[in-house]
Image (tube, rainbow, N blue to C red; front, side, top):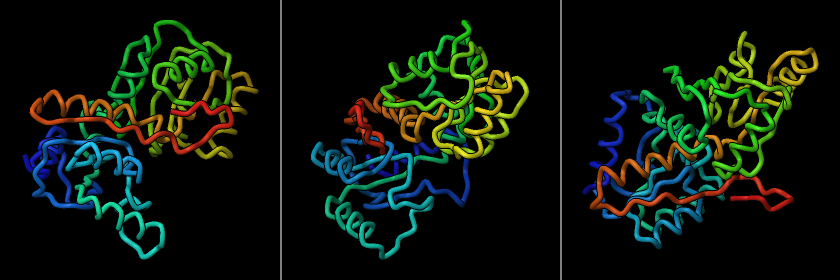
Length: 264
């Protein structure tokens, strides 16, 4: 198959079309013949190297390769060096960001729910990168964070607010979406999970709410930890749809390094 055929097939699953999208080819050729497909969150140099050595002709990633949303090029030294390295491999890189988020249910949310293994009723809201869960058993944010770390391999979830108050209502707003603050403020909202957050606004709001006696908590999973399972799910589905292709998920690892070396 050609790279473009695989990419267009993935895009078509959402039914979403727009002339303005970041989901474009970042390197290589859409006409490249593909026998192996690599999937990851980021096209880090290590991911590109490992995927290339495995024999992948196509690498599908969720987030930018060149440090800005639309992957516009500049002459900055590190970016230029990375671009030259990628070009030397001949690998075709395509971004798969908007289409999975505009699919219903959101593919990224689906993947997170699959791997988190939360015991509750799941409701996909139809809002970009958002899902709500009603837990069958009241669970504290601390307990929930520990469960998610164990099930997904996230190294370190930060908790703001009422860490030890049993809750049943959980909202997932993964990556760095808009509307997280509004969801945290919403009456009935108890635990909000997100990838990245402004500590002086959202974090302090959750802490103040807890100290005033409210059942409010914010769980910060890290951007990669909060979305990579959606890309794992993408790799699984692609492998099932095309058993003739080699498909493999490549872990880019979390961007942070921790003193206890608990990293994936």
